[in-house]
Image (cartoon, rainbow, N blue to C red; front, top):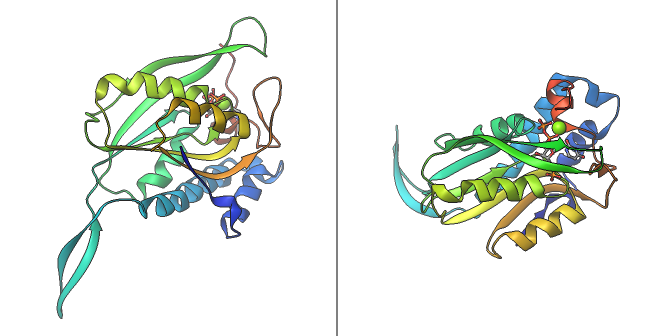
Length: 219
Ligand SMILES: O=P(O)(O)OC[C@H]1O[C@H](OP(=O)(O)OP(=O)(O)O)[C@H](O)[C@@H]1O
Ligand SMILES: O=c1cc[nH]c(=O)[nH]1
Ligand SMILES: [Mg+2]
């Protein structure tokens, strides 16, 4: 897997990440969602540099401009629910993308330490020969990303696959590397060292879904 960790270079992205991490600022739900969207926009821009481009002639009021424009048929798939603001940020740049949504949540069977990923809802277009972007702001154990990818397989074989995430744990990044083809790209805003015994990224941000939309009752 080709890992593009945007935190290796300082940019305004650091400000947005620091705000979603900060235990006080992150309580402002609207700001939290908007910061995830803004990070999605930056990740979309970086990822767009690897698309396939073709020359198009654009007629201006004063003449003709030869422009290289992307030709990829993009399918943007996000994992509910924390994926929604990231999805919106990506969609701000990929105007004509088709969209897929999948639900994946952690089901704690016996105790908070052990869980399985439940995939229930899935709406997806044909993926054959398209550019699949799989987006989830948190890459903790990596199990949701891999379970989602398995569930998408009956919808066709994409030409290329890009995973997009905001914060990952080293363990989750290693886990997805093992399950995706070596041509897969991972675009990630930053990578933290640890996972705690409940599978939360440390220092991370806490629960992205709860921060964006409010606490949910455990099922
Ligand atoms: O890498 P993993 O260990 O699989 O963890 C990451 C998943 O956990 C979060 O979802 P969560 O289960 O909290 O659902 P939510 O979006 O409804 O809050 C997050 O949005 C990812 O989907
Ligand atoms: O740290 C984590 C891990 C999984 N899901 C989250 O929202 N946060
Ligand atoms: Mg959650």
